[in-house]
Length: 598
Image (tube, rainbow, N blue to C red; front, side):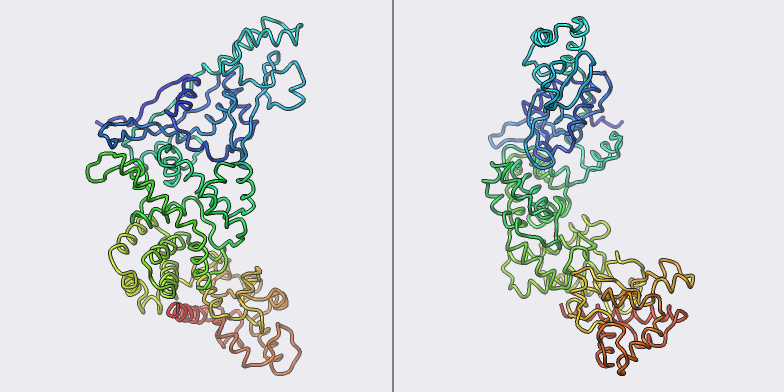
């Protein structure tokens, strides 16, 4: 018989808020933006007033921890669902400030009209209107008694129906006495089980990620700097996308603005590069895997709880050491020199724009490789080559596109036990054999859409070689990618579409090439044998119609750089499939040469 791993209890709202105040229930999201708007807070209060259900809260109990003196401390509960509702209640009932979407601390005042029994978000007009109680917090929170509120309102509104007023105010004060369900999950449940319970109970279908659990664990800590660390992770990831957020933090969170963390990330205020804009999931995975030599985030939750994997006991010393290691990993991640040098290495491989990155896992693990090699004191030039090769190998083989966490775990354990260059060489032997280059990659190029990572590896190869765009004399592929140039169909899309080909056929990546917009427009829907005849003519002294190439030598070099077979001069729609086969072979050869020279 299965043991029940949770308990469902009904608590008075005032009891839940008391547990929050006394830190028996930790609200990890309290340091993150309160995403509800004030009208949602108003509606929650109205639902409670009307006696409507407001859903369950879900809390996951931390394990009991063995302290250094041998005694045991009981684990507190972490609220994993219901943060917004509880935060709304602390704002409306206790009058506490919340951190809004702009990361500013604000008061949310909910007004109540006793005669109409209606709630509204307080505003200057309501405040001046004696028919409204502009802020219910003092009454519901117990700072003002029912009799005091009754007399105060009656004095301002002497003609009101006293019996109706008393009933409305009584119901208002009873909001704190309404019940709310709390599902308390046992501490020995694993993250997968907790996630499953959460999904089954949560009607919104919201999915909790493993990173969410880690962030909750970090934010609930008050002993080892978890709350500041949580802010550091959140703020860094937000600032990486929006550098102007620096000023808001400085103004809205003056305490954090004085911290070492803030000083370490201040460089982001002048950073507008979009190649690597990490989420907190990315940052956590890199910091954890690099420091702990493990790849599965549930292990981090256990370690931050103090779990001894051998004895199965939770120990304070392990929790303390784990927070220290994670903090070191986070600081390594956000370090300006580390971050910028890593981005520079990735750019030197030809990946110059965030839109080219289709496998975030490959980028994250490449950063782990960089940080570990740098910590080992490996020579800079060697680091650059090894990181580039591992990154491109990962993209080409789809190494982290499936069970990324399992692969992270496997790779970091392998890397931790040997020489990285030797390990990479063995991976290359296994994954990038001659059969891969000659057959496997050619087959992988038989796909459609610019979302394909293989297309972007080809583009990166062109950027690294400083190739010019198709039919361009001076404009490089790098410039076209940087300035959102056209991705041209060598066999025009409209031409193929009118010939009855499907989207997946005319959007083959072997039919794509970066081209100047004006060249693309002039080609229109002409078959290659037509527009290439014009180009040949301009190379023989005729009028220049496409780009600025005016000699056959330059044209042939341009076609080679773009892997366009010379047979293109005589090709019409009937030769399209032959063209794709030839070009895939040429693209694969170019990618192989590119990789071997990284």
